[in-house]
Image (cartoon, rainbow, N blue to C red; front, top):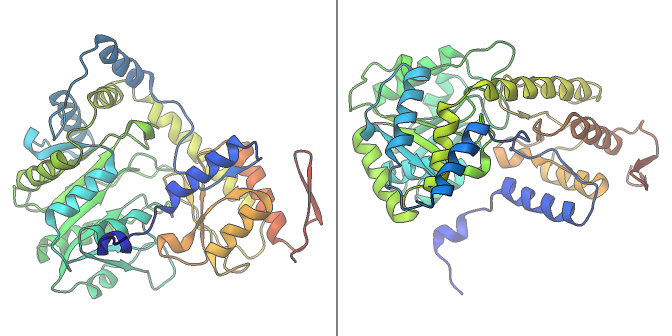
Length: 405
């Protein structure tokens, strides 16, 4: 059976695969701990649930416009005014089936085959595959100083005549790093000067720690006309803990948004009106749920850092936001896929290999779970890796013996 060149060249999403594996193991009754997930455990805001339930109870569940319902677009416009100081028109806004689809159709709208898209490493696992699905070439930029943020000079060195876009994700998945405001200003200025599209993936922009403030890339745009090539991506999945509702959006020029909406219309049509209504409830409702989640994640991060710092040899940069930590385990094992598999096989702890994010030797660890999951999961990992750990470990009533060191 023959497949297309694109289909043969696209890798499975490792994060989705791990979620499936966790569900199977959990259903079997295995004492598995998922430290690789990107899904907050808090419930969706009550305003979102009530809003969706009211529409569902009405029975008037119909098709939605390809670019989103007027009510949701109005809520997105208000949100953009509040957080970006920008008042887009209705034709500058499109709602999608999650921020992932918004990024995908944005790339489809602007990329030609063999054109290049630049993004800093570490990067979200889907960026590379999305670019390849458009026939483009992904160009990761690994910071030379070993940090999680490149300099503008490093970005410039990778720009060619084929460069079509740059993607910036800050706070960053998987590192939790927040890029300096000076870097954001430089990248905006550079892309404007070169006529390069700039996609701002802001899905975590309100989940910041230690008093850090959201950096608004739009503040540094000089040409705020319809010629602007900045596309801002956001959604309700992360900050409102509404991952299963699959609502994201894009804000950009009318020409680009129109092209994206046409593409989306042929792919999936508009997002479910029930899920759109839930997003309206979240965006217009009481916002204390976002701060509550942020505080929980900050506390979970502090707990994780405290345990990680008890490991010998691990290098860890404190995350400034999101719900991930990206420690360097290369002192124990440089092959992150091998290390992740070892932890799953020996102590049933799921982690995501750093190689999937463009940085070998690291593991992405999630702070979405409970304090118990975080501490017990890390204790199991330490037992596997630390030669000074006891020879035996009990997981429930099951006794494990360390026989591989």
